[in-house]
Length: 460
Picture 1 (cartoon, rainbow, N blue to C red):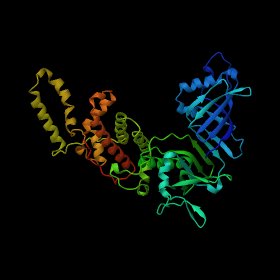
Picture 2: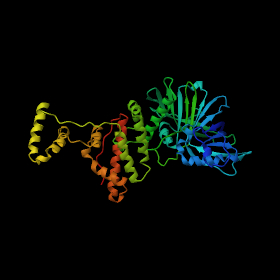
Picture 3: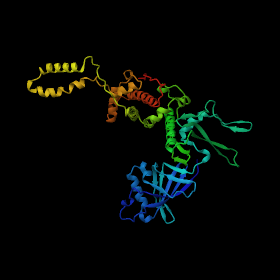
Picture 4: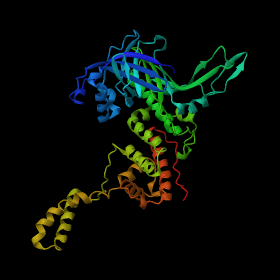
């Protein structure tokens, strides 16, 4: 996956008028020639223009004004098919990481601005021998996961081999796909060197049971990536994807984010004592697909909570609970009556007549108007906290929590309003431990995994 590839095309920005920037200069063209360079840790787009138009300055001014994450949505790519096997280049989801615009950036008489983006997608003619398969190459954190599936390099009968560990050969399933962690072995050798090197690149290998669409293939990979991240408490992402479908082969390149944490190999803090292989073989598929949006948001937040300070960690983990609660309706419960509706109305009227004896007659009419609202309110039981009701439904007993929900809410309000001095650091640490367990278990529930237990013991 190293080296450099170059692609030529025409790029335009049809929905914006860049000439509104730096008025008084020559108008820039609507379409520009561009070169895209795909390198191991960099994706660069060189956009060429007439220096008299100051297009580079106009584009950079515009980039500063927009959310750079939306850069690709404003672009249009054409004429990228000089290579007969390339169908199109897609920048739709590309985000700007940085750009350079210097006085020495010339090729011939044309000046250029270099825009560095985080991802690019290529559509190639189908690879017939690989249709209905895909490979998603993982970032550095993925290596610690895949290595557990393999033995070390050994030699038998003058043959060298790195084999998979016993009982770890099976593919896991998700709907219309099967997948498993694998190494892609990349040999590096030189005739003049005494050493030959084998580089092990971690990937997820997919096999599709039927012809599927691009959106399905990417969704399967995203769910698997999220589960890997959650179990190992680290951000797992793919930096290269090769998806071989009937209509085309899709190559996606992404710039990796440097990881801060090493992958862990357990969920024991959530009372889930099974290894990763058991976790992947459990019955999570249907629930994960149904709850994909909530899982996507909550797991990313769960991982992020490990990278921030204690106050931010508390807010993120509390917010995970709110994400899991979203969309769930709270139903108020009525008291059970023991007489008919007619008799109930009669009793309320009797009560009204008694109460009117305590009010000045001149105010009876106003009192009766207010009373008309009372019977309906009194028919319902005192309303439980929606948070309490939700956690009970999810299998917790909040009354046994070592820190009450009221205390958690007060801590949340203090941090949100900047009143940090009101919070005891030791109590905050205990709250973060409890919220870690609650939020993690709620994520397990979203996957339909119930083999957890909530540990109420938190050291003082």
